[in-house]
Picture 1 (cartoon, rainbow, N blue to C red):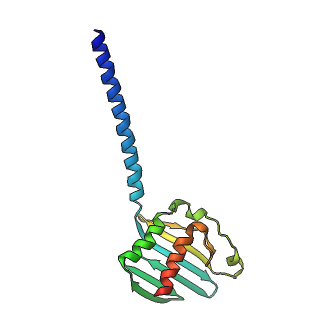
Picture 2 (cartoon, rainbow, N blue to C red):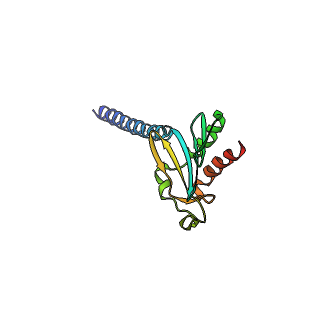
Picture 3 (cartoon, rainbow, N blue to C red):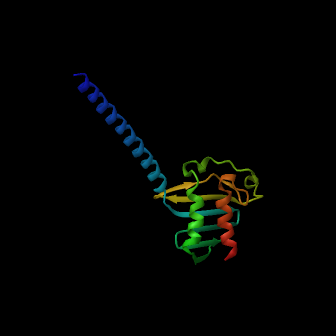
Length: 153
């Protein structure tokens, strides 16, 4: 009788730890899948002041530059899209609207007001407004990549 009780307890403990392990691995798979599902569809940099507007829009195959309604479409390589979209994927998109600008020249027309708009999984995420050329540090690499790419072509 004691042997049966001991075997039953071992069986019960083994199945309980197996369930815990399975639940933990399912949770880590869910988190990994959620990160991988963040698909960047479009990235836009918009800069404006009185009398001038500029925007650069990246999609997986095209870059559209608009300077005061003078629109230029340029095909981009998959590597170029990958470089820019990877920078956007590394951001916490739900928090970019709360990022603080390091300068305030846009409040008195000393600088263009800029913002970055990222479309991911059908939803738009818009950064807080910042002075053109002086993005929040979290957006700096993405801002420089967009402008660097724009200047080379």
